[in-house]
Amino acid sequence: MPDTVTQLQDQTLKVIGDALQSGTMQRARRILNALHPAEIANLLEALPHSQRGIVWNMLDHDDDGEILLNVGDEVRNGLIQLMDSDALVSATEGLEMDDLADLLADLPDTVTEQALAGMDYQDRQRLEAVLAYDEDTAGGLMNTDTVTVRRDVTLDVVLRYLRTRGELPHATDSLFVVDRYDHYIGTLPLTKVLTNKPTELVRDVMIDNVEAFSSQTEANIIAKSFQDLDLVSAAVVDEKNKLIGRITVDDVVDVIREEAEHSVFSMAGLSEEEDLFGPVVPSTRRRAVWLGVNLATAFLAAWVISLFQPTLEKIIVLAILIPVVASMGGIAGSQTLTLVIRGIATGQVGRSNSKLLLTKELAVGFLNGMVWAIVVAIVVVLWFKDIKMGGIIAAAMAANLMCAALAGVTIPIILRKLKIDPALAGGVVLTTITDVIGIFAFLGLATWLLL
Image (cartoon, rainbow, N blue to C red; front, side):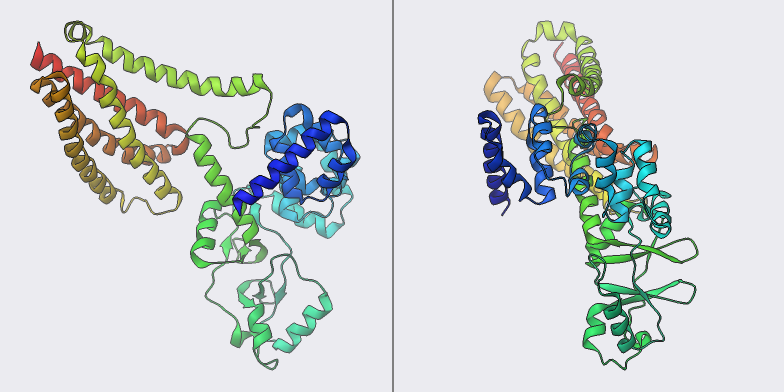
């Protein structure tokens, strides 16, 4: 299925590209406006920066809000600049409250004021309730379109109430049971309403052991709960246990995707919202900062090598073998670092089990160190006919792999305590440590034993 989607997008891109070059826009316009808003968003992100404005003007603009929500921040800001105030206000119409809150954060203040002025009092109150919370919390993710029932009514009453409403909010799999003061009590799955006798009371068939999320619950905790409990929707309550909204699985999927993208891009010092086809100068500027940090760490490793310059001048073969020690330590440390960062993100690693994890990873580092130290020693002895050199590189590699395991566990835990994103800074710190320790151990042992 993913390959099919990719092929379709490639075909669409080719058609659009050919249309732009030939000037035959009618067919391209029909294809574009037949796509889903998310597909249009993907298409816009895959187009060169110079062509986006042309394609944007070819759209019917019925789904501008949905399209803007599905593109990255950088692309969205570029598209917003192509729209006038009236078009931006129109784009906000019909969006769910949580999506509207996300979009308004990127719109000019004047447009936000116009959008709020065009809403009725109840919708404005709901929107303000969502905007009051951080976007990465349950309150920021929630939608306020809840359907509630009392526990002392029959299922027949519930059914008649639902028929009177005529339509249920998107992704409604359960109704929320509340008391007269809107305090959350439990959930009533729609399957229970449909499969039990109409004379049954809500209190007898409801589920009262599913806890609601506090409005301040972090997004990653919510995502893990949805995954572990196979939830489709969940209630959100304030500090007084009053029901204020609900979170649906489509919002959680967005959270999971964003966290995955963040982890991948952070390891390279990039933002997950970076425009793939963005302008050259801003892209260069952002990447230059991270390259500068890495250059500083490279100079640190070079300085350590310079301390052993007399040794290197006398034994040239050491310079050939330095990358072997540094590289093995870096890879081993990255494996541990990745596992620990993922464990922290999923809640599997905490204060109670971090020592146990450290012990396990040190044991893995020790065994891998022994195995690959022997392998490398044999290769070096056969290559350079030097038993001492084989023993030196074996000892340095074993020590570096142990240090890599130690660093891989402790670095993300320490960075987390310092409120620094381990995915962003962990790789640079780890590489610096493994390079410096590996090089120092290798050249230090060589200086001591060979000179």
